[in-house]
Image 1 (cartoon, one colour):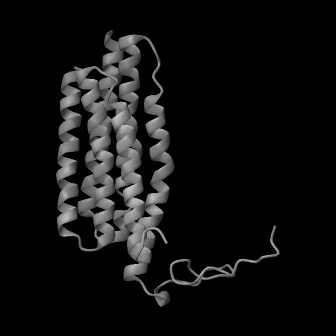
Image 2 (cartoon, chains in turn blue, red):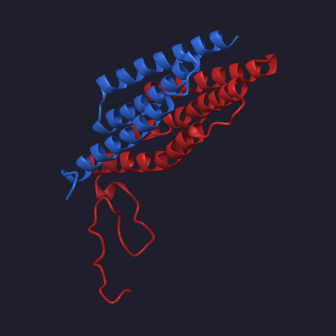
Image 3 (cartoon, helix red, strand yellow):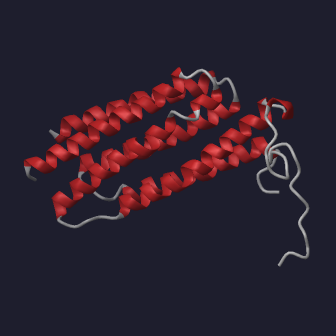
Length: 89
Length: 125
């Protein structure tokens, strides 16, 4: 039963990644693209944890944590660049 | 692994998959950029939260130990999601809205996107 639920959740997040990619390609504003990239990071964290459940190992939590941190820092840096024209003043 | 644990894990996985899809579908469907800020919060809280709850139950049923890695990831995401949303809204405001489009704030100073910060007072401790 877990295998079917895993396949369902993974395909949902895969389609969600494609929809985010559509929003990144279409835009129309830079804020939309940042938001879509942030959503992509969230979906990839969920996919990594799903892969860890599927393989039955706990080794994928550290990558998920690192991707969460890098995604947050990159989103803030991109917004800061749009706001001020500079990241570190 | 008993049947009840499998049922709980599968229910959490299905709920999280549906909410993750709904978050990105709202990103496509909603019309205004500031409306689109609303949709991916579902993917953050319920989507990733459901996956992490399923993972906690799975590893508890498998090994017998409670793992707290998932709680760390959830805590980090819940802490950073409002900051990210605030930054994206400010970036949109600074690029697309002028000062006259917004109502005046009730406080002493104007909007932080448009006005300079107040002078720092040296007599403050």
